[in-house]
Amino acid sequence: MIAETQPEWVQQLEKWHLWVPVRIALALLTAYLLTLLVQRAIRRFVKRTIELPGVDKARAEGRQRALAGALRGALIGVIWTVSIITIIGELGINIGAFVATATVVGGAVAFGAQQLVRDVISGLFVLSEDQYGVGDVVDVGHATGTVERITLRSVRLRDGQGGIWHVPHGGVLRVANLSKAPMAVLDIEVSRATSLAELDREGDALCAALAADPEVEGKLVGEPTAVGVTNATDDRYVYRLTVATVPGAHDAVRRRWRRLALQAFESGQLAAPSLAAPVVELRNFVPPVEE
Image (cartoon, rainbow, N blue to C red; front, side, top):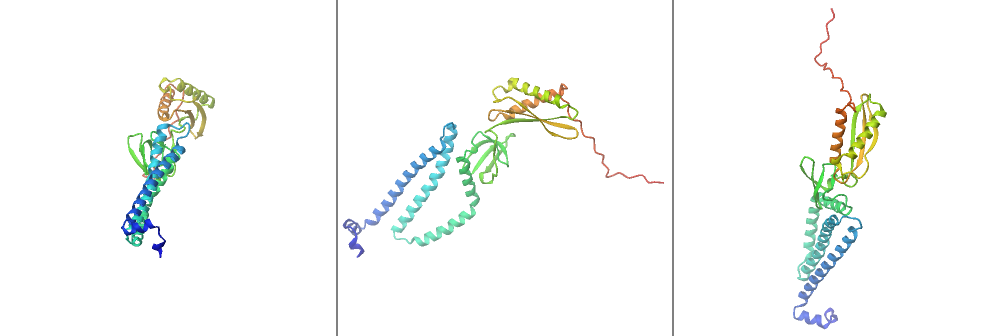
């Protein structure tokens, strides 16, 4: 009864045993067309999302490639998986057992690779939100250094001593991007006997010396500022100086500023805090015996 309701060309294809190959070809063609459509849609979506006015072009292209590759791989994998299952069903193979086995295996793999999935999902947010990129100096909690390579799963950092750190995105709880708004901060400890007026005068002198220093020319984006006393103890003041720098130059500026401060201590313009009195070891002390 069902065969009589089918179009004549379908009945003819079934008589020639060509209906199954035609449906398999249609499934493959549909998967191919969907693949092209998904690739184009993802490319346009990512480009519209990431390439915003004022964004560094090279950095945006890197983020675009990473995000487009991840989304494209996931969606195309789903499309072709459905297509393969459809083809298996057309060949007369019972896909119930296949689907059940794939479900069990997929659940086991997902349970064992949950940390990997967590790393990849976190990496997607890192790239889409532009938390950091290649060349940035970041503090990810586990390590601090310059980003040399970033993938969906991890980031590779090089610290100041040349060490290479591979940090998975899923293990990063906080990120401090020191290249977004770099600031060189210098804390100077001076003697408590120094008057506050004299300390402010010497702090302004250090700011002026840094601004006129030819070794930091082009590395400052603002005027050095003397914040003032940030802490005080029994024998010393902690005096803070700050200045905004170009990305990645804060360490070099801090090193030069520290040298200027040491010169001020050597010339007597600043007085170092006195050393603490030595602690007497009393563990082996034997009190005298009274007669």
